[in-house]
Length: 238
Image (cartoon, rainbow, N blue to C red; front, side, top):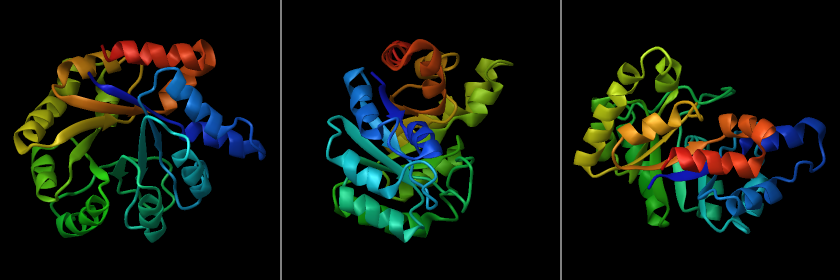
């Protein structure tokens, strides 16, 4: 069954907008786990506009499910943060400086040497590595040569096209999933998955191990409540 990891970046954004500690990020993470989340995801960025680096250290002390830290390994500070906290998983994302949100995956062909080297650093510390990729057969094949344990399929294109033609929207993702399976890679997915498109995606992608969802889930929680929303997302995953 596919695991649900809740990205709590938006909780940190809300907290930071007024200063202080309301909402309490640590308590929300614990509540997410209590309400059924099977992992907690954070994506700290260099400007600390949502998750702060000190948040990661505090979260590491309390999370009892899987801790997934996302970020750009070309930032030395990020690499050190991951090595200090040793999460169950690190997801490597090729963010540009000042980027609002993730909008592309790694070019695992052009960046293969760098990825091989940095992945080895994390795996030496027994940290599972996933890399963020677009649903391209060639990119997924090359990802396997980088030494990663998993790939995370960037699902924005699927989400954008879902309402027009969901069968066409998922075609490249199904192909990429097959390539990943043949290469022996674990499969994660994330970005713009929501209550409308998640069930179809999960049903169509064999071997999907984990989805990381933040923005849509937190938005839904404004109407349905956090506990209920997490359960609703869990039900979409079967």
